[in-house]
Image (cartoon, rainbow, N blue to C red; front, side):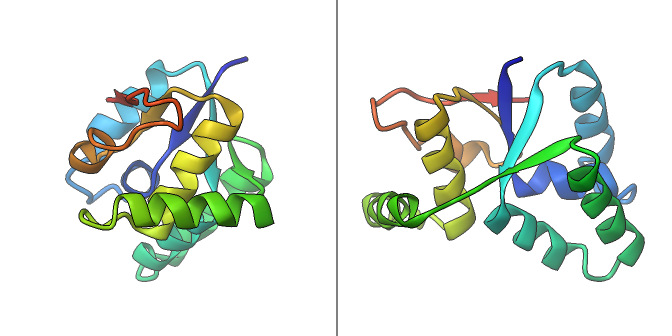
Length: 136
């Protein structure tokens, strides 16, 4: 099965009914047949943004536990590449969560990202210079 990366924005919007992107992200998620893959930095960011909503935080952890969203491991080699990405895109600037997603995309050869951040992910490129296909 193919994988698609999921960024912080859609994770939060899916779990927060009051989010202005909730309906759009729910409709998009229903259309996807791919496995959703993210990183621990993205999950940390999402948990922080959901700190006012303990039930949503719990729902996010349930998604990890039941495999609806998978968390990619990162190691020392990834840290080196993440640092290089953050230096390359320091003018944006690229944050740690985004850099972790771009690194995992390169490592796992994933071309699509479910994100609300079209501005930054429209600029980011894979290690091979390939742009990301942004969903939705």
